[in-house]
Image (cartoon, rainbow over all chains, first blue to last red; front, side):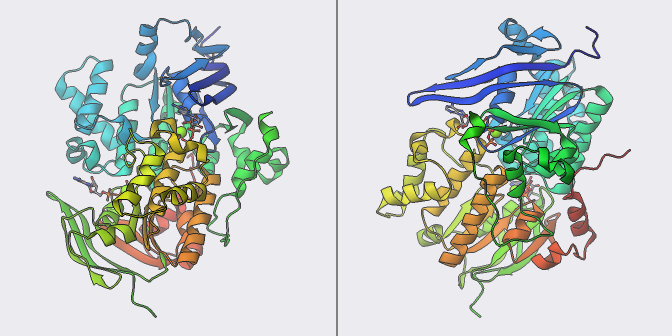
Length: 286
Length: 250
Ligand SMILES: Nc1ncnc2c1ncn2[C@@H]1O[C@H](COP(=O)(O)OP(=O)(O)OP(=O)(O)O)[C@@H](O)[C@H]1O
Ligand SMILES: Nc1ncnc2c1ncn2[C@@H]1O[C@H](COP(=O)(O)OP(=O)(O)OP(=O)(O)O)[C@@H](O)[C@H]1O
Ligand SMILES: [Mg+2]
Ligand SMILES: [Mg+2]
């Protein structure tokens, strides 16, 4: 198959189970999708399995979790049968993930700049000075003011939104083929958020990166992504072109869960005393 | 008119040579919900941490419930004023179950009836009671944030400092948490200071708000001005435009 038609990623019937003393938690229950050189959004409520889907692709499911899948292919290569060492090598270099909680994934006793520089040197032959320069340029690219000052800060000294951008810089510096971004901009103010999205957008358009964009922000996903998977209880309720999330004429085709999510949003132009909440239907998981 | 619950007068905060909060002043009436929005890194969390007594390197004057506040607050203050942190992971101890996390503040403040209060706080934030003996790493991001809110709720505070309380939550849980916060405010006459980058959330929750940029308050406005999209400053206008979503240049 030629490169143009082989998807970057193919996932078939993915399951993630946690065997706990009180029973099995089925975090992901049979999810299938493929990713091309596009922006694929994943939305869905808290606990619906979005992060575990990303982690399963990277082989980062923590104990006592187990990953089962009929298929998990990276550019046609089978991730499941690949030697562990080869898989580890893909991670960070070819497939990267910006974790949901930036500070949790940063090393607390190393400055944020040194951490990005180290990530660069793991994947590229570069001396310390080059790595530092690349890092400063990357911090500037993610719209950090005063990159020199921020380079020398420890994770507890950066604001929430700065921490998120540090993580994004660290993942992008390796120039991955696939970026899984888990709530990458949830702590950013809206103007900086758009600037960061612009960087991700350019990487998809110019370098052909595949982006999995996990978010709670339905407006953002609708305006930014090409396609959206709506997850509930570890399953995909529906997959659709992102634009349809805001298209009144497409609402009759929407899954009731998607309509429920849209109905929960506060709207500036239409203030309500009380927000609608979701009524869930056990049928959805049947 | 009762005295304001919070008076912040020319607050300044520096970390070493960086001056991150500059002459910020605002007042919050008792029972009011006051919003802070603005640029990432502009000092919003720092302002809340000063209010909560968690930052001691500030200057200016701070009055809360009629009392001028010293740098170091007493135990009664730390019960009446609760903060929900932006970072739901960092604020929970990794080796403590939810039950421990909720029982701890009650024990510190020698409050009895722990069993009932914990059960109620968990149900208030929509977490099943089966979660009581889970550890933070066994929860999703949104579930952890709800634990953080429950932990602040068990102490029944009068001033609630909320730093991005719903940015880690999905829209359905966000709606539930916002409805809960609104109901609590009405029932218990609580006062809120809420930081959020989501203008629709601030518009929904707050009567008035302040816009921060570079450590300063650039504009204070009413929620009505916000929803009419009529702020005065260019920066506040830019925030409103950006909140409409991503635009791809053709
Ligand atoms: N170690 C674990 N043991 C048991 N259950 C777990 C464990 N880790 C995660 N889970 C459960 O797996 C489910 C899916 O979690 P996941 O983190 O993928 O949710 P999510 O969709 O990313 O939610 P959020 O939007 O809140 O981040 C959740 O119900 C969570 O409680
Ligand atoms: N302990 C610290 N040491 C040094 N600098 C700090 C410390 N804490 C905060 N800062 C700096 O103070 C500034 C304001 O941070 P703050 O966390 O208040 O921002 P914020 O408005 O809450 O941003 P965000 O929206 O990204 O959370 C930032 O430049 C940050 O780097
Ligand atoms: Mg998650
Ligand atoms: Mg903050």
